[in-house]
Length: 210
Image (cartoon, rainbow, N blue to C red; front, side, top):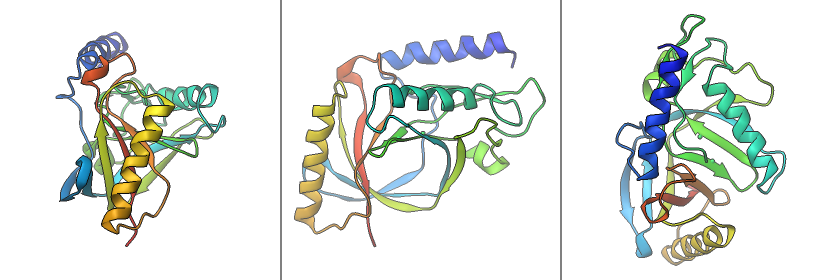
C-alpha cells in the first residue's frame, strides 16, 4: 500500500474511533475465567508481542509525548523492514517486506504502566511472521508470556483522578477476593483521546501472582 493510501485508511479508522467503533482492530486474545464484584474480570491472556519504550518524564506530560512519538515512528516505518503499521489508539501498546513497506493493522489496547513504560501490542499475524526490529534507540520488541490479569472497565475522560479512583476500586475488590498481585496497576486504552467520552473503553488492570 502506498503512503497516501496508508494515511487515508488510518484517518478513516481514527474518525471511526471518535464514536468508539473498534470492529477493525485486532486485540490480544484472552478468556474471562472469573468475574468479581464491581465488574472486575480475571482474564487469561495468550502470549503476545509488543513494541515498547520508556517515558523519561516518569509521570505523564512531555515524557508520555516523547514515548508516543518513538512508538509512532516505529509503526510508520522506523523499523528494519520499512513496514507501516496503522495507528489507532494513542495511549501501556510487520512482516518483513520491501522498502515501500505494507500496511498492517494496529491492535488495541495500548498499555501504559505507572513507571512510564508505554507499549503497543502487535497483530497476531505480524507476531507469527516475525515483527521488524526497531531502528530507533530506546524502542524495543518484547515477548509477553501467557499471564493472568485482573481488569476493570470504565468510560469517560482519563484524568489522573479518574484513573486513581478506578485503581482503588480494583485493588479493594482483589484484596477482598484474596487475589495476590504481581505488580502495580497499569492503564489500557482502546480509543483515541478525542473519542466521545461516554463511548470510550478504558481499563485499569493488574498482573496477578501465582
